[in-house]
Length: 123
Image 1 (spheres, rainbow, N blue to C red):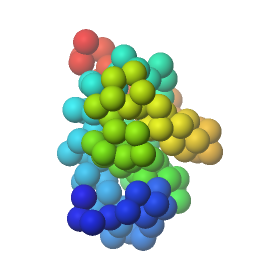
Image 2 (tube, one colour; image 1 turned 180 degrees about the vertical axis):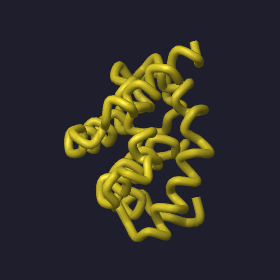
Image 3 (cartoon, rainbow, N blue to C red; image 1 turned 135 degrees about the horizontal axis):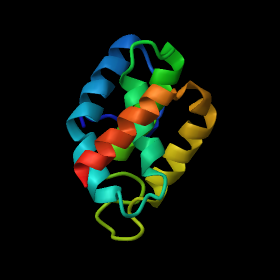
Image 4 (cartoon, rainbow, N blue to C red; image 1 turned 90 degrees about the horizontal axis):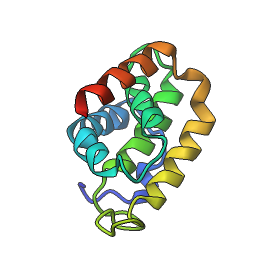
């Protein structure tokens, strides 16, 4: 990933860093979500966070936090590689839970409805 360190990914970053991160998240989110869906019990909140992160009405700092956590989620190799079945997404869950806990109030009913529809369509 362009020789970026994991610690750098977890920082909200500048507007340009957020734009690049949003591109990476868009490119890999659904593929990773399909693989991780059976391991992450709160996938509906993760998908709602995805829609919140891409919403231009979401405050800059909140978008940065969400994009950083979602970028970590879509990385194939992180602290615990995702290919380790049953354990590979545990670090991703920790990062996502922390991000969600800090920004939960910014996830709107519209984000949750978009997530619900997207998850229904992917079944």
